[in-house]
Length: 454
Image (tube, rainbow, N blue to C red; front, side, top):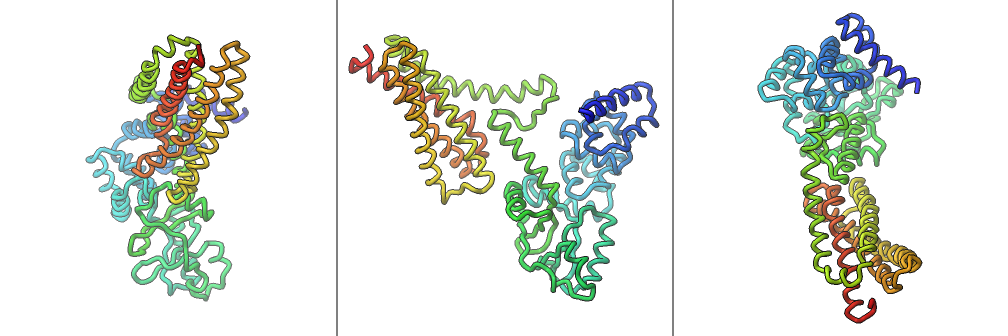
Protein backbone atom coordinates (compact mmCIF):
# COMPACT_ATOMS: atom_id res chain seq x y z
CA UNK A 1 0.00 0.00 0.00
CA UNK A 2 2.85 2.34 0.90
CA UNK A 3 4.52 1.66 -2.47
CA UNK A 4 1.26 2.45 -4.28
CA UNK A 5 0.89 5.78 -2.42
CA UNK A 6 4.54 6.64 -3.14
CA UNK A 7 4.13 5.87 -6.84
CA UNK A 8 0.92 7.89 -6.98
CA UNK A 9 2.63 10.84 -5.28
CA UNK A 10 5.53 10.62 -7.75
CA UNK A 11 3.07 10.71 -10.64
CA UNK A 12 1.23 13.75 -9.32
CA UNK A 13 4.50 15.54 -8.56
CA UNK A 14 5.87 14.66 -12.01
CA UNK A 15 2.76 16.00 -13.75
CA UNK A 16 3.06 19.22 -11.76
CA UNK A 17 6.75 19.63 -12.70
CA UNK A 18 5.99 18.99 -16.38
CA UNK A 19 3.35 21.69 -16.30
CA UNK A 20 5.86 24.08 -14.71
CA UNK A 21 8.50 23.05 -17.33
CA UNK A 22 11.06 22.49 -14.57
CA UNK A 23 13.43 20.14 -16.40
CA UNK A 24 16.02 20.03 -13.62
CA UNK A 25 13.44 19.00 -11.01
CA UNK A 26 11.99 16.37 -13.36
CA UNK A 27 15.46 14.88 -13.82
CA UNK A 28 16.10 14.86 -10.06
CA UNK A 29 12.78 13.12 -9.42
CA UNK A 30 13.10 10.46 -12.12
CA UNK A 31 16.84 9.68 -12.19
CA UNK A 32 17.02 7.72 -8.87
CA UNK A 33 14.15 5.42 -9.92
CA UNK A 34 14.57 1.93 -11.34
CA UNK A 35 13.94 1.72 -15.14
CA UNK A 36 10.79 -0.37 -14.59
CA UNK A 37 9.42 2.29 -12.20
CA UNK A 38 10.18 5.01 -14.73
CA UNK A 39 8.44 2.96 -17.41
CA UNK A 40 5.37 2.63 -15.21
CA UNK A 41 5.29 6.39 -14.67
CA UNK A 42 5.60 7.03 -18.41
CA UNK A 43 2.71 4.67 -19.12
CA UNK A 44 0.49 6.79 -16.85
CA UNK A 45 1.33 10.04 -18.65
CA UNK A 46 -0.18 11.61 -21.76
CA UNK A 47 1.84 11.34 -24.99
CA UNK A 48 3.26 14.88 -24.81
CA UNK A 49 4.16 14.55 -21.11
CA UNK A 50 5.77 11.18 -21.78
CA UNK A 51 7.94 12.62 -24.55
CA UNK A 52 9.16 15.43 -22.26
CA UNK A 53 10.28 13.06 -19.49
CA UNK A 54 11.85 10.52 -21.86
CA UNK A 55 13.77 13.27 -23.65
CA UNK A 56 15.42 14.28 -20.36
CA UNK A 57 16.76 10.80 -19.57
CA UNK A 58 20.46 10.10 -20.23
CA UNK A 59 21.09 7.52 -23.00
CA UNK A 60 21.87 4.61 -20.64
CA UNK A 61 18.71 5.13 -18.57
CA UNK A 62 16.62 5.74 -21.70
CA UNK A 63 17.85 2.47 -23.22
CA UNK A 64 16.74 0.51 -20.14
CA UNK A 65 13.38 2.29 -19.96
CA UNK A 66 12.72 1.69 -23.65
CA UNK A 67 13.00 -2.06 -23.03
CA UNK A 68 10.55 -1.94 -20.11
CA UNK A 69 7.60 -0.26 -21.84
CA UNK A 70 4.98 -1.91 -24.05
CA UNK A 71 5.53 -2.02 -27.81
CA UNK A 72 3.03 0.73 -28.65
CA UNK A 73 4.50 3.05 -26.02
CA UNK A 74 7.99 2.27 -27.30
CA UNK A 75 6.96 3.26 -30.82
CA UNK A 76 5.66 6.61 -29.56
CA UNK A 77 8.79 7.29 -27.50
CA UNK A 78 11.05 6.52 -30.47
CA UNK A 79 8.95 8.82 -32.65
CA UNK A 80 9.40 11.63 -30.10
CA UNK A 81 13.22 11.74 -30.35
CA UNK A 82 15.69 12.42 -33.15
CA UNK A 83 17.57 9.73 -35.04
CA UNK A 84 20.80 10.89 -33.40
CA UNK A 85 19.29 10.46 -29.93
CA UNK A 86 17.90 7.05 -30.86
CA UNK A 87 21.33 5.97 -32.11
CA UNK A 88 22.89 6.97 -28.78
CA UNK A 89 20.25 5.01 -26.89
CA UNK A 90 20.58 1.87 -29.03
CA UNK A 91 24.38 2.05 -28.69
CA UNK A 92 23.95 1.53 -24.93
CA UNK A 93 21.97 -1.71 -25.37
CA UNK A 94 23.11 -5.31 -25.45
CA UNK A 95 23.07 -6.75 -28.97
CA UNK A 96 19.89 -8.79 -28.44
CA UNK A 97 17.97 -5.78 -27.14
CA UNK A 98 19.36 -3.53 -29.88
CA UNK A 99 18.24 -6.06 -32.48
CA UNK A 100 14.72 -6.14 -31.01
CA UNK A 101 14.40 -2.35 -31.16
CA UNK A 102 15.94 -1.99 -34.64
CA UNK A 103 13.68 -4.75 -36.00
CA UNK A 104 10.65 -2.58 -35.19
CA UNK A 105 11.98 0.49 -37.03
CA UNK A 106 11.20 1.49 -40.63
CA UNK A 107 13.91 0.35 -43.04
CA UNK A 108 15.57 3.75 -43.57
CA UNK A 109 15.58 4.60 -39.87
CA UNK A 110 16.99 1.16 -38.99
CA UNK A 111 19.74 1.65 -41.57
CA UNK A 112 20.63 5.05 -40.09
CA UNK A 113 20.85 3.65 -36.55
CA UNK A 114 22.96 0.68 -37.66
CA UNK A 115 25.37 3.05 -39.40
CA UNK A 116 25.52 5.26 -36.30
CA UNK A 117 26.46 2.67 -33.69
CA UNK A 118 29.92 1.07 -33.46
CA UNK A 119 30.77 -1.06 -36.47
CA UNK A 120 31.44 -4.17 -34.39
CA UNK A 121 28.10 -3.92 -32.59
CA UNK A 122 26.37 -3.10 -35.87
CA UNK A 123 27.78 -6.26 -37.46
CA UNK A 124 26.64 -8.39 -34.51
CA UNK A 125 23.16 -6.85 -34.51
CA UNK A 126 22.78 -7.48 -38.24
CA UNK A 127 23.65 -11.15 -37.65
CA UNK A 128 20.93 -11.38 -35.01
CA UNK A 129 18.36 -9.72 -37.27
CA UNK A 130 18.65 -12.68 -39.66
CA UNK A 131 17.10 -15.04 -37.08
CA UNK A 132 13.33 -15.25 -36.50
CA UNK A 133 12.45 -13.40 -33.30
CA UNK A 134 10.90 -16.48 -31.66
CA UNK A 135 14.02 -18.67 -31.97
CA UNK A 136 17.14 -19.10 -29.85
CA UNK A 137 19.05 -17.00 -32.37
CA UNK A 138 16.44 -14.27 -32.12
CA UNK A 139 16.71 -13.93 -28.32
CA UNK A 140 20.44 -14.56 -27.83
CA UNK A 141 23.10 -11.91 -27.28
CA UNK A 142 26.57 -12.09 -28.76
CA UNK A 143 28.30 -10.55 -25.71
CA UNK A 144 30.04 -13.42 -23.88
CA UNK A 145 33.35 -14.55 -22.42
CA UNK A 146 35.00 -17.07 -24.73
CA UNK A 147 38.49 -18.55 -24.27
CA UNK A 148 40.58 -21.10 -26.11
CA UNK A 149 40.99 -24.55 -24.57
CA UNK A 150 44.72 -23.88 -24.04
CA UNK A 151 44.11 -20.83 -21.80
CA UNK A 152 45.04 -20.94 -18.11
CA UNK A 153 42.74 -20.04 -15.24
CA UNK A 154 44.65 -16.77 -14.73
CA UNK A 155 44.33 -15.81 -18.39
CA UNK A 156 40.62 -16.62 -18.28
CA UNK A 157 40.08 -14.47 -15.16
CA UNK A 158 41.81 -11.55 -16.90
CA UNK A 159 39.48 -12.05 -19.88
CA UNK A 160 36.47 -11.94 -17.53
CA UNK A 161 37.70 -8.69 -15.97
CA UNK A 162 38.20 -7.13 -19.39
CA UNK A 163 34.76 -8.20 -20.64
CA UNK A 164 32.99 -7.07 -17.46
CA UNK A 165 33.47 -3.45 -18.52
CA UNK A 166 31.24 -3.92 -21.58
CA UNK A 167 28.77 -6.63 -20.49
CA UNK A 168 26.72 -7.45 -17.41
CA UNK A 169 25.75 -10.74 -15.78
CA UNK A 170 28.75 -12.95 -16.50
CA UNK A 171 27.77 -16.38 -15.17
CA UNK A 172 29.85 -18.75 -17.29
CA UNK A 173 32.97 -18.82 -19.43
CA UNK A 174 32.68 -20.73 -22.71
CA UNK A 175 35.65 -22.81 -23.90
CA UNK A 176 36.22 -23.27 -27.65
CA UNK A 177 38.74 -24.97 -29.90
CA UNK A 178 40.67 -23.39 -32.74
CA UNK A 179 37.61 -23.49 -35.04
CA UNK A 180 35.47 -21.73 -32.39
CA UNK A 181 33.52 -24.93 -31.72
CA UNK A 182 32.07 -25.08 -28.22
CA UNK A 183 33.81 -27.81 -26.24
CA UNK A 184 33.14 -26.82 -22.65
CA UNK A 185 31.79 -24.44 -20.04
CA UNK A 186 33.10 -23.18 -16.69
CA UNK A 187 30.85 -21.51 -14.07
CA UNK A 188 32.31 -18.26 -12.75
CA UNK A 189 32.35 -19.43 -9.11
CA UNK A 190 34.36 -22.52 -10.05
CA UNK A 191 36.79 -20.37 -12.02
CA UNK A 192 37.67 -18.03 -9.13
CA UNK A 193 38.10 -20.90 -6.65
CA UNK A 194 40.61 -22.81 -8.79
CA UNK A 195 44.41 -22.42 -8.73
CA UNK A 196 45.41 -19.86 -11.39
CA UNK A 197 48.17 -21.90 -13.08
CA UNK A 198 45.88 -24.78 -14.15
CA UNK A 199 44.59 -24.99 -17.76
CA UNK A 200 40.92 -24.14 -18.20
CA UNK A 201 40.19 -27.46 -19.90
CA UNK A 202 41.00 -29.31 -16.65
CA UNK A 203 37.99 -27.83 -14.84
CA UNK A 204 35.49 -27.33 -17.67
CA UNK A 205 32.25 -29.22 -18.11
CA UNK A 206 32.91 -30.93 -21.44
CA UNK A 207 29.23 -31.81 -21.98
CA UNK A 208 27.48 -28.44 -21.63
CA UNK A 209 23.77 -28.05 -22.37
CA UNK A 210 23.44 -26.11 -25.63
CA UNK A 211 20.91 -25.28 -28.34
CA UNK A 212 20.94 -24.62 -32.05
CA UNK A 213 20.15 -21.09 -33.19
CA UNK A 214 16.99 -22.36 -34.94
CA UNK A 215 15.50 -23.82 -31.74
CA UNK A 216 12.06 -22.43 -30.86
CA UNK A 217 12.03 -20.07 -27.86
CA UNK A 218 9.46 -22.25 -26.05
CA UNK A 219 11.88 -25.17 -26.23
CA UNK A 220 14.63 -22.89 -24.92
CA UNK A 221 12.45 -22.00 -21.91
CA UNK A 222 11.83 -25.71 -21.25
CA UNK A 223 15.57 -26.41 -21.32
CA UNK A 224 16.22 -23.62 -18.80
CA UNK A 225 13.53 -25.05 -16.53
CA UNK A 226 14.66 -28.66 -16.91
CA UNK A 227 18.34 -28.03 -16.15
CA UNK A 228 17.98 -25.00 -13.79
CA UNK A 229 20.21 -22.85 -16.00
CA UNK A 230 21.13 -19.18 -15.78
CA UNK A 231 22.95 -19.10 -19.14
CA UNK A 232 22.64 -21.26 -22.25
CA UNK A 233 25.12 -21.27 -25.17
CA UNK A 234 23.77 -21.07 -28.72
CA UNK A 235 25.59 -22.87 -31.52
CA UNK A 236 25.26 -23.40 -35.25
CA UNK A 237 25.05 -26.76 -37.05
CA UNK A 238 28.86 -27.03 -37.02
CA UNK A 239 28.95 -26.60 -33.21
CA UNK A 240 30.46 -23.11 -33.51
CA UNK A 241 29.57 -20.80 -30.61
CA UNK A 242 27.28 -17.96 -31.72
CA UNK A 243 26.05 -16.37 -28.50
CA UNK A 244 24.35 -16.94 -25.17
CA UNK A 245 20.86 -16.70 -23.74
CA UNK A 246 20.48 -15.45 -20.16
CA UNK A 247 17.75 -16.17 -17.64
CA UNK A 248 16.29 -12.64 -17.87
CA UNK A 249 15.69 -13.16 -21.61
CA UNK A 250 13.95 -16.47 -20.88
CA UNK A 251 11.71 -14.89 -18.24
CA UNK A 252 10.53 -12.45 -20.92
CA UNK A 253 9.84 -15.44 -23.21
CA UNK A 254 7.89 -17.28 -20.50
CA UNK A 255 5.77 -14.19 -19.79
CA UNK A 256 5.18 -13.65 -23.50
CA UNK A 257 4.16 -17.27 -24.12
CA UNK A 258 1.88 -17.43 -21.06
CA UNK A 259 -0.02 -14.29 -21.99
CA UNK A 260 -0.10 -15.25 -25.67
CA UNK A 261 -1.81 -18.55 -24.79
CA UNK A 262 -4.08 -16.78 -22.29
CA UNK A 263 -5.17 -14.24 -24.89
CA UNK A 264 -5.72 -16.82 -27.61
CA UNK A 265 -7.76 -19.07 -25.35
CA UNK A 266 -9.92 -16.04 -24.59
CA UNK A 267 -10.26 -15.23 -28.30
CA UNK A 268 -8.19 -12.03 -28.15
CA UNK A 269 -5.50 -10.46 -30.29
CA UNK A 270 -2.14 -10.78 -28.49
CA UNK A 271 -1.26 -7.14 -29.32
CA UNK A 272 -4.16 -5.66 -27.35
CA UNK A 273 -3.34 -3.85 -24.08
CA UNK A 274 -5.57 -2.63 -21.28
CA UNK A 275 -4.79 1.07 -21.93
CA UNK A 276 -5.41 0.89 -25.68
CA UNK A 277 -7.98 3.36 -27.07
CA UNK A 278 -11.50 1.98 -27.65
CA UNK A 279 -11.17 2.01 -31.47
CA UNK A 280 -8.06 -0.20 -31.37
CA UNK A 281 -9.65 -2.69 -28.96
CA UNK A 282 -12.78 -2.78 -31.12
CA UNK A 283 -10.87 -3.62 -34.30
CA UNK A 284 -8.92 -6.37 -32.53
CA UNK A 285 -11.87 -8.04 -30.83
CA UNK A 286 -14.43 -7.83 -33.63
CA UNK A 287 -12.91 -10.51 -35.95
CA UNK A 288 -12.79 -13.05 -33.12
CA UNK A 289 -16.38 -12.31 -32.14
CA UNK A 290 -17.40 -12.71 -35.78
CA UNK A 291 -15.76 -16.15 -35.88
CA UNK A 292 -17.53 -17.09 -32.64
CA UNK A 293 -20.81 -15.90 -34.14
CA UNK A 294 -20.30 -18.23 -37.10
CA UNK A 295 -19.70 -21.19 -34.80
CA UNK A 296 -22.74 -20.22 -32.72
CA UNK A 297 -24.88 -20.34 -35.88
CA UNK A 298 -23.48 -23.79 -36.58
CA UNK A 299 -24.76 -24.92 -33.18
CA UNK A 300 -28.05 -23.13 -33.82
CA UNK A 301 -28.45 -25.03 -37.09
CA UNK A 302 -28.45 -28.28 -35.09
CA UNK A 303 -31.24 -26.92 -32.90
CA UNK A 304 -33.13 -25.92 -36.07
CA UNK A 305 -32.99 -29.53 -37.31
CA UNK A 306 -34.82 -30.63 -34.15
CA UNK A 307 -37.32 -27.77 -34.16
CA UNK A 308 -40.32 -30.12 -34.27
CA UNK A 309 -38.93 -32.15 -31.37
CA UNK A 310 -38.70 -29.02 -29.21
CA UNK A 311 -42.24 -27.98 -30.20
CA UNK A 312 -43.49 -31.40 -29.15
CA UNK A 313 -41.81 -31.23 -25.71
CA UNK A 314 -41.16 -27.54 -24.96
CA UNK A 315 -39.46 -28.38 -21.64
CA UNK A 316 -36.46 -29.64 -23.64
CA UNK A 317 -35.51 -26.02 -24.39
CA UNK A 318 -34.97 -25.42 -20.66
CA UNK A 319 -32.30 -28.12 -20.31
CA UNK A 320 -30.44 -27.78 -23.63
CA UNK A 321 -28.04 -25.08 -22.33
CA UNK A 322 -27.21 -27.26 -19.32
CA UNK A 323 -25.81 -30.05 -21.49
CA UNK A 324 -23.95 -27.69 -23.83
CA UNK A 325 -22.64 -25.56 -20.94
CA UNK A 326 -21.30 -28.51 -18.96
CA UNK A 327 -19.62 -29.82 -22.12
CA UNK A 328 -17.94 -26.45 -22.62
CA UNK A 329 -16.71 -26.38 -19.01
CA UNK A 330 -15.36 -29.93 -19.24
CA UNK A 331 -13.63 -29.12 -22.54
CA UNK A 332 -11.99 -26.03 -21.00
CA UNK A 333 -10.58 -28.21 -18.21
CA UNK A 334 -9.19 -30.70 -20.72
CA UNK A 335 -7.76 -28.03 -23.03
CA UNK A 336 -5.99 -26.26 -20.16
CA UNK A 337 -4.21 -29.43 -19.09
CA UNK A 338 -3.41 -30.53 -22.66
CA UNK A 339 -2.09 -27.13 -23.82
CA UNK A 340 0.05 -26.88 -20.68
CA UNK A 341 1.38 -30.39 -21.33
CA UNK A 342 2.28 -29.43 -24.90
CA UNK A 343 3.92 -26.19 -23.76
CA UNK A 344 6.08 -27.99 -21.17
CA UNK A 345 6.95 -30.87 -23.48
CA UNK A 346 5.13 -33.40 -21.25
CA UNK A 347 2.71 -34.36 -24.02
CA UNK A 348 4.19 -35.69 -27.26
CA UNK A 349 2.86 -37.80 -30.12
CA UNK A 350 4.33 -40.97 -28.59
CA UNK A 351 2.11 -40.69 -25.49
CA UNK A 352 -0.83 -38.91 -27.16
CA UNK A 353 -2.95 -42.08 -27.42
CA UNK A 354 -2.68 -42.74 -23.68
CA UNK A 355 -3.64 -39.13 -22.86
CA UNK A 356 -6.56 -39.26 -25.30
CA UNK A 357 -7.95 -42.47 -23.80
CA UNK A 358 -7.47 -41.09 -20.29
CA UNK A 359 -9.44 -37.92 -21.05
CA UNK A 360 -12.22 -39.91 -22.72
CA UNK A 361 -12.42 -42.14 -19.63
CA UNK A 362 -12.46 -39.08 -17.33
CA UNK A 363 -15.22 -37.55 -19.47
CA UNK A 364 -17.24 -40.78 -19.28
CA UNK A 365 -16.88 -41.03 -15.48
CA UNK A 366 -17.72 -37.36 -14.95
CA UNK A 367 -20.64 -37.74 -17.36
CA UNK A 368 -22.14 -40.54 -15.27
CA UNK A 369 -21.86 -38.61 -12.00
CA UNK A 370 -22.82 -35.17 -13.32
CA UNK A 371 -25.56 -36.67 -15.49
CA UNK A 372 -27.03 -38.50 -12.49
CA UNK A 373 -27.05 -35.31 -10.39
CA UNK A 374 -28.62 -33.36 -13.30
CA UNK A 375 -31.27 -36.03 -13.84
CA UNK A 376 -32.24 -36.07 -10.15
CA UNK A 377 -32.32 -32.25 -10.04
CA UNK A 378 -34.62 -32.21 -13.10
CA UNK A 379 -36.94 -34.75 -11.45
CA UNK A 380 -37.24 -32.57 -8.33
CA UNK A 381 -38.08 -29.62 -10.59
CA UNK A 382 -41.25 -31.53 -11.45
CA UNK A 383 -40.51 -32.60 -15.03
CA UNK A 384 -41.05 -36.01 -16.58
CA UNK A 385 -38.49 -38.49 -15.20
CA UNK A 386 -37.64 -39.48 -18.79
CA UNK A 387 -36.24 -35.97 -19.36
CA UNK A 388 -33.96 -36.68 -16.41
CA UNK A 389 -32.88 -39.85 -18.18
CA UNK A 390 -32.26 -37.80 -21.33
CA UNK A 391 -30.07 -35.41 -19.36
CA UNK A 392 -28.15 -38.33 -17.91
CA UNK A 393 -27.41 -39.93 -21.29
CA UNK A 394 -26.72 -36.66 -23.12
CA UNK A 395 -24.36 -35.51 -20.35
CA UNK A 396 -22.32 -38.69 -20.68
CA UNK A 397 -22.17 -38.29 -24.46
CA UNK A 398 -21.15 -34.62 -24.36
CA UNK A 399 -18.52 -34.99 -21.65
CA UNK A 400 -16.95 -37.80 -23.66
CA UNK A 401 -17.00 -35.44 -26.68
CA UNK A 402 -15.38 -32.75 -24.49
CA UNK A 403 -12.59 -35.12 -23.44
CA UNK A 404 -12.00 -36.29 -27.00
CA UNK A 405 -12.12 -32.89 -28.75
CA UNK A 406 -10.25 -31.11 -25.92
CA UNK A 407 -7.35 -33.50 -26.47
CA UNK A 408 -7.34 -34.28 -30.19
CA UNK A 409 -7.85 -30.73 -31.54
CA UNK A 410 -4.82 -29.17 -29.74
CA UNK A 411 -2.75 -32.16 -30.90
CA UNK A 412 -3.86 -31.70 -34.52
CA UNK A 413 -3.07 -27.97 -34.36
CA UNK A 414 0.35 -28.75 -32.89
CA UNK A 415 0.93 -31.32 -35.64
CA UNK A 416 0.24 -28.64 -38.28
CA UNK A 417 2.48 -26.17 -36.40
CA UNK A 418 -0.43 -23.94 -35.34
CA UNK A 419 -0.82 -22.63 -31.79
CA UNK A 420 -2.81 -25.19 -29.72
CA UNK A 421 -4.26 -22.38 -27.60
CA UNK A 422 -6.38 -21.37 -30.60
CA UNK A 423 -8.45 -24.52 -30.05
CA UNK A 424 -10.31 -23.19 -27.01
CA UNK A 425 -12.96 -20.80 -28.19
CA UNK A 426 -13.22 -21.67 -31.85
CA UNK A 427 -13.03 -25.41 -32.45
CA UNK A 428 -13.59 -27.23 -29.16
CA UNK A 429 -16.47 -25.07 -27.94
CA UNK A 430 -18.18 -25.66 -31.28
CA UNK A 431 -17.73 -29.42 -30.84
CA UNK A 432 -19.30 -29.41 -27.36
CA UNK A 433 -22.16 -27.10 -28.38
CA UNK A 434 -23.00 -29.12 -31.46
CA UNK A 435 -22.40 -32.40 -29.63
CA UNK A 436 -24.49 -31.33 -26.65
CA UNK A 437 -27.48 -30.18 -28.69
CA UNK A 438 -27.29 -33.12 -31.08
CA UNK A 439 -27.04 -35.78 -28.36
CA UNK A 440 -29.77 -34.25 -26.18
CA UNK A 441 -32.24 -33.45 -28.94
CA UNK A 442 -31.38 -36.55 -30.99
CA UNK A 443 -32.07 -38.79 -28.01
CA UNK A 444 -35.26 -36.80 -27.33
CA UNK A 445 -36.44 -37.44 -30.90
CA UNK A 446 -35.84 -41.18 -30.42
CA UNK A 447 -37.70 -41.13 -27.08
CA UNK A 448 -40.65 -39.33 -28.68
CA UNK A 449 -40.66 -41.74 -31.63
CA UNK A 450 -41.08 -44.68 -29.25
CA UNK A 451 -43.60 -42.85 -27.04
CA UNK A 452 -41.30 -42.50 -24.03
CA UNK A 453 -41.87 -38.75 -23.59
CA UNK A 454 -45.57 -38.53 -24.43
